[in-house]
Structures are given as C-alpha cells and as structure tokens.
Length: 401
Image 1: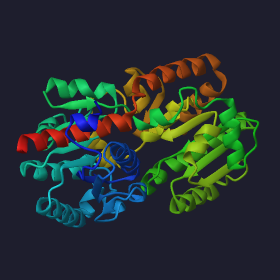
Image 2 (image 1 turned 180 degrees about the vertical axis):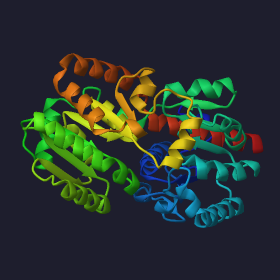
Image 3 (image 1 turned 30 degrees about the vertical axis):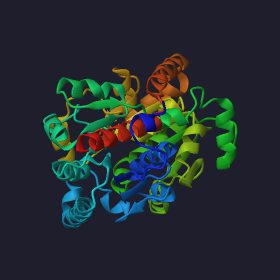
C-alpha cells in the first residue's frame, strides 16, 4: 500500500507544512524535501522562511532567509533584536494558523527555540539536520527532546547519542550522496569541468576554498594564497582554482591576490564551487559542508579552519570529538589532514599539499575510504525525510482525532 494511503494522507490532501531554513545549505535541503513531499502529496503547501531554491518550488517566505544567516557565538549578538522580531512574527503566524507539521532545517540556535514554542502548543515538530550535540554542549540534548517529535540525521554516527538519551531520531542519509554518482569525479568528469571553467585540460590544479563568509576568507585567504605561491615554487606548472560564493567574496579574493602579488596561474570564479572541485586534483578548503562534497567527488583534500580568538576559546572548551571535518567524523579516524586555528600555517599546509601531490599510495587510500563512506550515506535522503515528516503529521492528526 502506498505510504500516503497507509498514513491516511491522500494525494489530494492539503497538508500544510511550516518550514524554516536559515542558510544556503538549508535552502538546498528544503528544496529536495518539498519536491519529495509533493510526490506523495501534490496539494501540500509550504510556508515560513526559505531561500531562492525553496521559493522556486512555490514556498511562501515571510522574511528573507539571509537575515538568519549568522554564525559563531559572538556575531548573533549584534543581530539579536532583529532575530527576536523575526522569531516572534513566525511564532505568532504559526500559532494563529497551526501547520500540520513544522520542520526546522538546521540553524538550531534559531529553529529549536521556535520548535519549542510550537511544540508546547501541540504543533508537531521535526528538526532536519542533527545539531552537533554529540560534539559539544551535550546538555542541549534535553532541549532537543523537549522541542521536537523527531530529529532527522544526515549521518549514521549521529544516532547513537540520541538513542542513548531516548530521543526519537532517524538516519535518512545525505541528499548530496544521492546526487553524486558513486563513480563520480573520474578523469572524464575532471576534463569536462575544466572545459566548462575555461582552463587548460592538462596539468595539475589545486582548488583553494577558504570559505563562503567574509570573516572566513579574511582569516584563511591570505595563508591559503601564500601556501599556494610557495608550493608553486617547487611545482611551477601547478595552477589554482578559487570559486567564490558571490560577487562580494569574488572582489574580496581578487583583492587578496593583488596584495600578495599573485596573478599568473590563479583562476577566480563567481560561483562554480562544484565545477572547481571536479576540475581539481587536490582541494584545500575550510571545514564545513564543502568537505563532504569534495569527499563524494573523490578529491584528496586537506582541511583548515580558523575562528576569532574568543569564539575559538569558547568552542575548544566545549568540543567533545577528536575531529571537525565530516570525512574524519564519518570514517571515525583521521582520513584527511586537519589544521585548526594556530596550526593553520603556511609550512603545515605546504607539507600536506606536497604529500598529496606526490604520494600515490596515500592518494589511493584516501579514495578507498571516500568510496566506503559514500555508500554508507547514499540512502535516497529526500524520500526518507519526506516519509518521516508525513508520518509525524499523520501520527499527530490521528492522536488529535
């Protein structure tokens, strides 16, 4: 029997779903979730806060998504009055006209607070993307338990912590692992990506990806560029690809290159991060979701990250895991090199880049590990998440009948 009938949700059902996505990665997840739910319930409607991808699927957004895009421990404080106004407006709307289910997509600092208010009003809530509660500030699990009916986890290593605390959780896999073929990133794809970017098909390329935010690039950009220049002294034919998140970051990166006197062999793009990783032989990047994409594309990488001193001091005291990059967390071992805060030096980066350029045995071992992880998280995530959300809505409806 089709899921929608088994749940008592017919294809004609006008199920109404509240959603909040606070950044670009959440917008992508929301887009896939909306499409998957619509395959089961074509008349479903969606409203809350979303980005351009969700809006293209017919989503109604009550505020611009970028107003929620803050990071760290310190930055949100400057934006607190505005964030509180947005939160209050959303809660007022949803309480006045309750959705059948609410889905908070990532952005836990904001979404869990909204979820708590709605959950207290007997509106069923789902949190999509497990907060890193297993990594730091583990007492947050009690807040999650009170605010949500279900947590949807993208990675298998996340669920044991929830099970230990008897908090409902479901591993659904990662949509990116479904979108990228298991054999993706081969030589033919690499050449096609280079053609698309307008760079030479032959030769070695290192992708430099110091982040998508201004502060990330300000901290990591100069050391990435200096490391690239030093590595090229030993490898004169090596070229560099730098994809930028938007025009503002493009201007910032080209300014850093000009300051460093770097021009020849550096190719800078507005966007095109996926193509740049496909075109590269090695990727040097900031810790974050991009490390997952590089791994799924089977690209050898090294990971770096640097925070403001205050944020780093707070984060380092709370961190409960030995790694920060997704490939290492998924592998449960140091699969790729990580350089954090005071270890983000030109010497450290150059040494690892040289190793990846010339050590074929290390290269092959990395790719084998990446393939194993890819298989683990390739689960048709959008469909799994859609079924879980509709199950929560149906359960709440049956209990309230």
